[in-house]
Length: 397
Image (tube, rainbow, N blue to C red; front, side, top):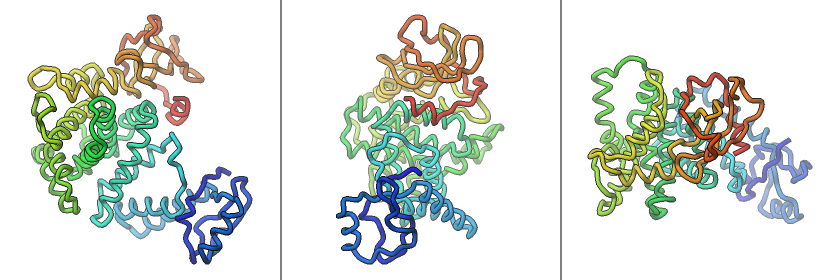
């Protein structure tokens, strides 16, 4: 039994409890279905010095049951995404102090929201999604980058949402840690990153799996999607001009320093650079991901082949070898980058394949700033013949 604390403000009164309430030691306090009739009764329970908890497995069973019921009724993805948040809030688990994240769960939320947004809930759900992604990225940026880089290479069916999440993370990290943008501007930046492709989410997922060249119609929709996405946001009730215009301009190729640009155009430029970098690193069915050095060069130099301020900020915060990328060491071991190093070229890595070409029983950590463990080459995700245990690795980072 895994017990997690419950926010008492969200326990329903005069309604059957959706979960059994327990003490911190697991003692049953109120059965599922029990009706707490008043605030006084709840306060009396808490006033005894008992903290209220639920069994996390009960929460999962209840939630999965609700999803199955909605799917049987052929409810839209947007409504299901809304139900996901509502179910989580109803018996809200206080997890703000946790560093770990269920990235597949967050990806499913993002995918449902972007594929089938509902006007009455879109901005609220988008705000919660961005908040959760940002919180985990700030608390453990290396683990966040590791998870998202790995998922971007393995979850091609949700490519569009995955790409948006990765751009959101690396752009926000650069804005916060290198460019020192104000919090309000960073939050708008995150919203722009998550919604920049909202008008073509389904098509972008299809393109990630497509092995043939783009058709004329597909190419046209890709070229005009920034304007379509901006209009889409307006139709969803978004009135924030910086957000909408940031999406409209996120493909603009305007070289030069960020200083002197409006907040909208500074956001758009950083998104454009992060967009290029993330797209190059993520594989598709039709092509391998590009070498990190190639992706970094495309990001670091602008359209005039000069150092780009936004691109340089991204490289400084992510590194030449981003967490989640695979490398070969001078020892001939193959490793995954798990943590950024003292400089952009010397990350900390976990060896997955030893020098004899055998998978290691447990990841062995190496510091690539040491000469004997220096990085000599990058390794494609497809060339790695072992299954990465992401959850296990994240627990060690």
